[in-house]
Length: 72
Image (cartoon, rainbow, N blue to C red; front, side, top):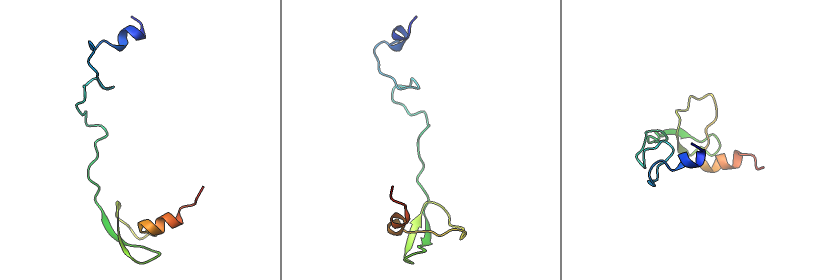
C-alpha cells in the first residue's frame, strides 16, 4: 500500500493528526496563568507578571519592558 492509498483510510471523514476527529487529546491545552503582583524597576508602577518574582532580577511593566527590548 502506498502513501496515497493510506492517506484516506478514514472513509472520507476528516481527522486530525491524532486520528480523533476534533476531540481534544489533552495536548496543547493551557491552564489559566496565575499572575503575581510586582513593582516595575523603572517606573515604580505596580504591575502583574506570570511568574513569582524572587528579587534577583528586575521586573518591568509592559511599557518599560517594550523599551528595554533591543530593536533588530
